[in-house]
Image (cartoon, rainbow, N blue to C red):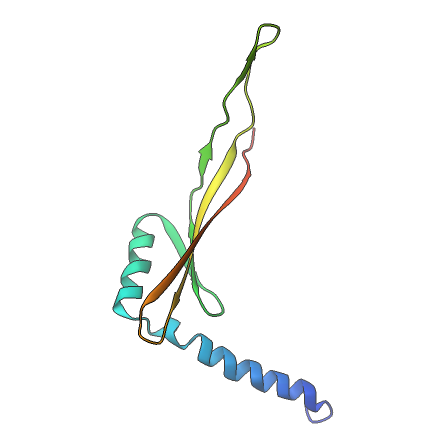
Length: 111
């Protein structure tokens, strides 16, 4: 079946080879990278291996409350807040040095 479509079989073989190369360091990270991931886990992050990086996501987002809007007509009205989640993506170079990208994801807080 794979021989009928050589392009498809080539893509499958290429994907298997590249995935093995890209994720090789994840199976055996350097001590610096391993310690960084363990520190994030101690801080309450959940870490998962992705295609070529380890992604650590804050398990419990914190709520950023918005200030109330106060007027003489309606008094103080509570405003909707946001749930803030910190996310780290960790990649390792050929020398075992981790590179860290950090970003924040937000969503409306439930009322």
